[in-house]
Image 1 (tube, helix red, strand yellow):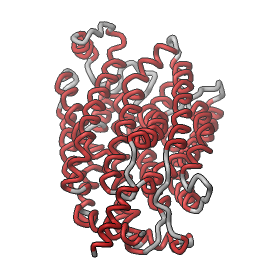
Image 2: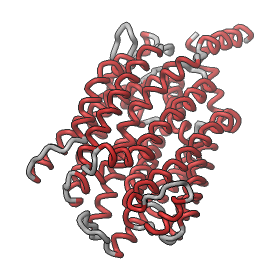
Image 3: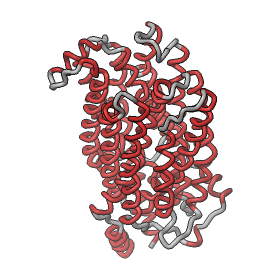
Image 4: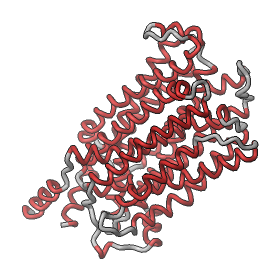
Length: 478
């Protein structure tokens, strides 16, 4: 017994990660989120208000293209990544191979060539499809990489915290700084502003992806006898209840993020009182009343993101002590309570709107690293139960859920606007459209969160099982 304990200690020491590697790995998600956050925050707005594709047409584009990428390409990419075998490992090469294509297609997706309406629709379909495909080829292996950098649970919690501070920084750039920058660099032409801004972000993102490739190392290597067929991998998945729960939970979480994230800009442009917002912003030195909605939108997001980062800092300690599942569930519930409060605020309640966003951001921030760390635990659970490790196809749950959530949330955004009479050419929207916008940043996005919280009661990997998985797998791997 003492020999096993000594071996476990040695293995855990060999799986410690340096600060350099944690930062290097986190830069990959920073890069991906410069694009992903732009999709989640601005895609619907870009199609309806910038490229002038009707909301009724933008809805099926976002929905059907997203559905294709999520259900078809993501699982295929998981199978391919698990069977990739190079001197650099299974997953790192994909980060390198896709870095430049990812950047180029991102620029094209937010460009506005002067086509007819039919040409614009075809262009949007092609570029959005290519973007989601290359995003999966880049980000699925990247996510799976976190499951093979280390098998140490505490190190995974720490890695997730580093990673999601980087995510929050990318989110800050996109949700706080991007809209005012787009307006400024475009010189009044929003299409030019989006194109120029995306080009700059893509250059940074491409460099960071290459740094991620250079600074990371795959340590959890399956033994040759653990090789499995695609059929065995899929059979294992269907019998893996924690995986099925995480797939559903991830979808629900990203439905909420895409719906409320995509609707915030409409909320500030159409619901919030511009005069009261301008007066509130004057306290912070913003005196340009014409840009009140843009700056209000940015500062609103900034408050939420800053407190999400603070929440992330509490995440590791709480997860180490109480387990990921319980900490995730409690804080997701608290964040949902503050989300629902937005429904009760009038257009003039500027101060309380901003305070509520800060509190929502703090409690949601605690959950952010845990979702991805829980998927790595599910990969361990599968290996522990079946004696076969298939990391990438396990992580495909996260990517399928993410894409489905982005698809449903984005499609809900444009569908809600279209069905309630939203017209981008109107200076003042109808009461029906404004009320729908209000519901879409409060009650509607709270529903998926609440369903997800209910699912956690059936998720069996609690703190006790986390410890059991870690110890037994370290001994097995020798």
